[in-house]
Length: 305
Image (cartoon, rainbow, N blue to C red; front, side, top):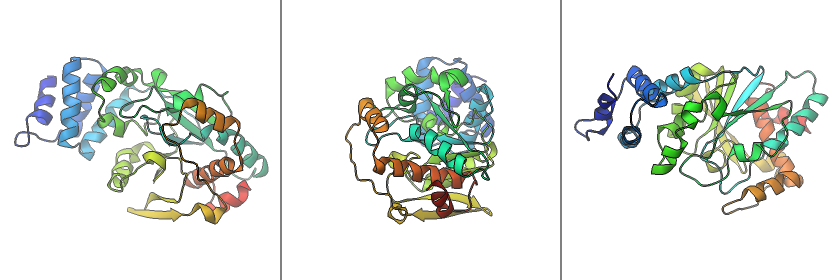
């Protein structure tokens, strides 16, 4: 199908625009990943599509296309941590601390089924200029519970769009659909949302790729929690909201950063204090709950401590 058909559908204007069908979205994204349109056409399409506002069916078609290009490598008993690809600029990453926390947890709790954590990364994507998971992961040795998937290896076609995305420097549909792709074939997935309307959208978009999905309101719209917040899960066809308060678990965190650097983040991880360690433990407690290794957040916290 001629790519100009998709351009006309999303870029004609308010009176002439129309939504793409799932199959059309699949075809459009497949052509982009195969580099069939010109760079100008790709950029025009992505920006016009964003302005039109993408539909759930269009997102699903895009995810279906991306999935068809992924090189899968299964990680059994795993939870996909769907970090944002646009990086961090005000909060540190905590995930390198999860390895030792999980190691200690399973030594004390042999009755609990193993849990592997999967993290995907690439060069930072627009619109931030912060640090990304790839920056952090390359500075630490691989562990037995923490698994890193580099997008250059499992989805090179999307990774190679980074220069173009940086050139026009705007959020696109890729920022939405890329965060919870599942190259590890994980059973469970978690992604972050800052705005509540996105909760049902994410759950609907990714539901066919996971046994269960949790959406959490983490720092900077990401998945790691640094203060009191909430998460959402779908139960009996209804989205249920759960709130939590860190002080109920003896967790206190008060640090504030402006434009945190990689050096800052690495220093925190290599010279962490009890405040950071407890915060990391609390995030692990959430993941144990989201992956159904425990029946409650209280149980997860008690077992961790």
